[in-house]
Length: 241
Image (cartoon, rainbow, N blue to C red; front, side, top):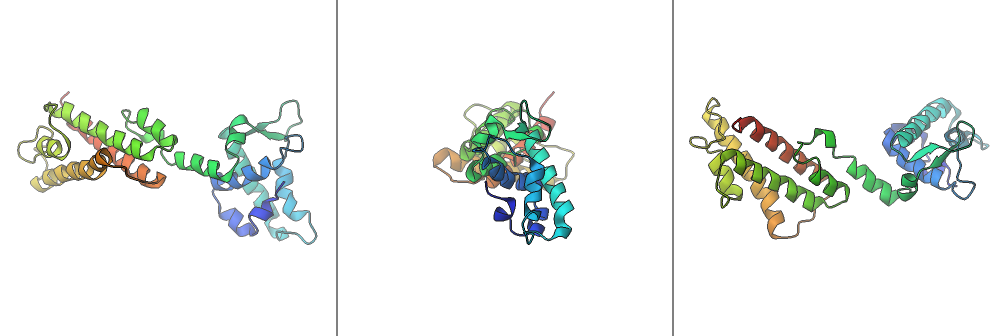
């Protein structure tokens, strides 16, 4: 199997990685053990750079490297990628079915993208359908659905007609003087700014996805979806109770 020092020759680089980032590298190392009984031990992997003569990593890094690999391995176990090997002594690990599926770098990177979108921070209206589309890699669909949800919620909260759509709906619902979702206690400039925020968001992120294919990456999708979530919470606060 590949050794950790083959993939990360510099121990300082290893120590600068977050547990989930180092976990992705370790998963590749651990997957390389599948031809030898499917078993591996994180401690042995951590000691590998210090077994050779001369050491691949300077000896002063030994404890820090062991701790970093132990931490990343624990993260992999909590995330369901590795587990204690059945009928083996403590310390012997094996890949789970999930771990085998994502053991390649490309698949693990896709998993890391999915972890960018914190489901528990999303507005409840987005936590099911939008999050599911996102983790499938359907980023354009997830963004469109998020802002479609904003549009529907604004229409309901403002008691607008079904024919009211998109930017015109936002301008009507949040009009600084007549909008049913305006806050009359806010400064006039703030009411105007909020109307522009909703109008700009729908015009920029919902309407283009309605009319043509738009290619976006995971990080962009996270930013857009979290904006939609924030807008939904504003609507909740303004809706009649």
